[in-house]
Image 1 (cartoon, rainbow, N blue to C red):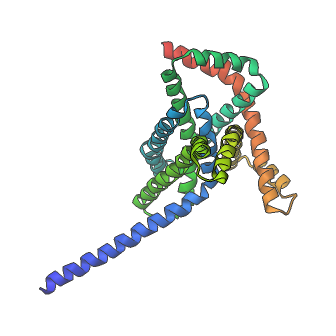
Image 2 (tube, one colour):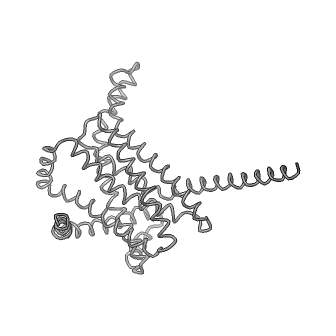
Image 3 (cartoon, one colour):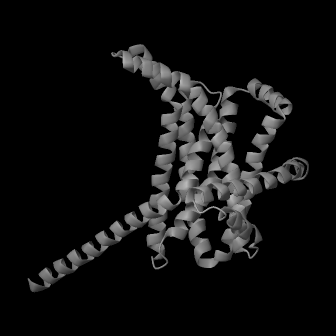
Length: 313
């Protein structure tokens, strides 16, 4: 009987330790996720532009497809890679992040170029409209998931860097997985609300019992096209800013401190923290736009033809 009581006491102690460990993992996951808030906001701002041009009934299915791709990116690809790199090759993390940052700079600068030179872009849109909707949807989803992969890599790296160094590898894995789920639900839940706001406004305008509700519904419907355009602009700016920030930070980690020091010097000409952040973000964006502008001809005339040649081979 005494042996059984001792065993039960040990089980209770183990349960308390496990419970404390779970609580610690959850707490660290939530705390670390907040450190990636900037990249999370960028992810939420970038995604709605991939829904432009589709019917209302396809919006939520497309969001769901992108969300599934995002959780696959984070849990199946990035989580194991992050753990392996942390253990075996921490030196490889900055160059890989910089490669992803360069891609964001390229895609953001390409969107700016389409605005500056709409003639070629208009021809591209006409070509896209001639394609079957299913093929266009598949292409858009793939493009969104590819962009999400880069942003998710940045998010997962930020979360990883915010976790305490003394956490075990299994606790780190659990915290990263929990953060991935929390962030994905937050991002794509927000995107779903944004893209369906106009439908909600229509319902309020048509079926609202009170005059205020109907006016609010009409206001939402009138405002949403401008909100979506604003989100597209914010999303493009976010890609350029985040990409430039990754490049500058990566160069600093690799030993070239001049860009970081110059940006910090300019930012600290003001004593106001908010203004310092705005100046830093703006200069990171300038770096990202400049790099993207260089990459556009390189990708168009060198990388894409070589990739296509390998594909044909």
